Image 1 (cartoon, helix red, strand yellow):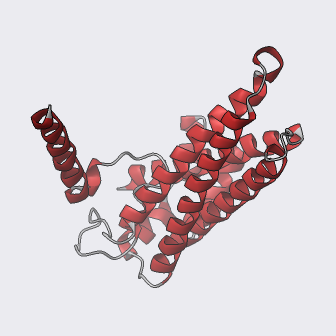
Image 2 (image 1 turned 90 degrees about the vertical axis):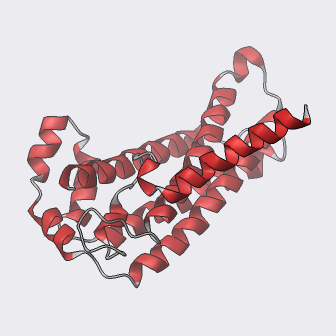
Image 3 (image 1 turned 135 degrees about the horizontal axis):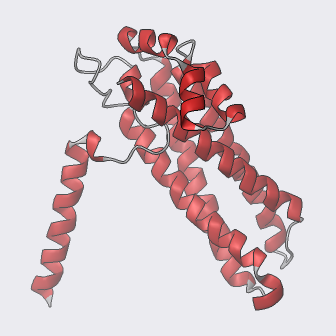
Length: 220
């Protein structure tokens, strides 16, 4: 049994090493690729800033972990009239969501600080400013309101501004969770408008980060 456990730990360790050694192995879901918009260790446009991109990935990881907790939280509230509501379970999901969002916010604070002192990659800047945003939006059937927000940042090369926007969204989500927690800790369910706002803000943040990733994937 001990040998089996050691083998499993060894496989996990090797897997983590591979991921850490190759940034490109990560998924591209929320603002990924933006690290190519900053000067990095390489001279080519394909090079990724090894300080910024991993923070984007880590922040997204914490956010998606919180999103999973939030999805469970919303399900519990949705089904409470037919299945009842266990406040211990509810509070556990809220606490986990709060913890993950707190980590996401802290990671993005570090990310923004790093981005603010790192020069942009001028080749990427040119590509962003010359990108055919309207045509891309129409051909891919994207949400115009959210895409226009992304366009407002990236069309002028303001990559750091897009990261700050995500950081702001994270803080709004965090505050909504704290409001929900303040009620659930007293075995009360917060007003439904808070849950609606939480779901909407998560959806908006998902789309925004996803569109940033898509644009970087398209230009690089």
